[in-house]
Image (tube, helix red, strand yellow):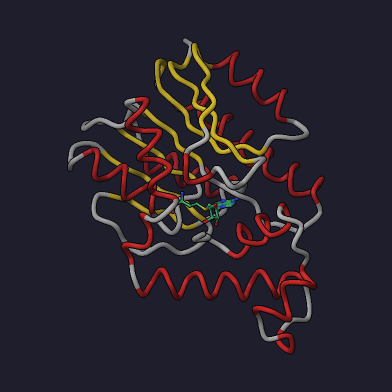
Amino acid sequence: MLYRSGAEALADFTQQGISCFTLIPRHLDFDQLVTFEALIQLMDNAFRQTCSADPDNRLDGMGKRLIEIAERDHLLRPGMTVVDLGAAPGGWSQVAAEKLAGKGRVVALDRLEMAALPGVTFIQGDFTEASVLAELKIHLGKYPLDLVISDMSPNITGIGVTDQARGMYLAELALEFSVERLNSDGNFLVKVFQGSGFEEFLRAMRATFSRVITRKPEASRGRSSELYLLGMGKRR
Ligand SMILES: C[S@@+](CC[C@H](N)C(=O)[O-])C[C@H]1O[C@@H](n2cnc3c(N)ncnc32)[C@H](O)[C@@H]1O
């Protein structure tokens, strides 16, 4: 299993019932670990080193999820304008830019750094901050927006209720942005976590899009609560 961040690895370990304490002595230098956050940080560092050593790693796992959904649902075509939220390390942006084949634009946003990708404009910032949202809107200018893809995952605290609420909050903000900025008939793909708030979110998606489809790509099968919702054809 290739993890894209320490937080994601930790979420997976938690789901499998492997606690922080079982994990530490086996895999990491115990002396370095003071807090739960330190564990996440160590995993993030290891992940970033792997990615910068081999940029093609970006396509492993994460990029494949988008390829699977995009091909099945014909999401990406040359000439489109696409916004990728929670884009680092860049698997989805890379796939989107390749499918657009130099015609159209991909604007990617993440609070983490992301190495440059051809055909992708990158904004580094926290999507929950009004100033970052304003910057994204400036980058988009008057271009009609055809597709929003959001793979944002919150920093995992290990407290289920908190993590679920944070995950749903990010999905709700992405939906709010899509409601405001997507073309009528535009599409929205978003990662969500089944649990508290999921049913309400699904209702809001159904009110916004003509068709809402659930997708669980092969690459995310191991994570039981994670799935993707695809809203197709934004209502006028
Ligand atoms: C699972 S990774 C995305 C992987 C990406 N789709 C790819 O293909 O490489 C989730 C990303 O969401 C980002 N993220 C989480 N909360 C965010 C926020 N509030 N603003 C911007 N990015 C955020 C994280 O920094 C992380 O890079």
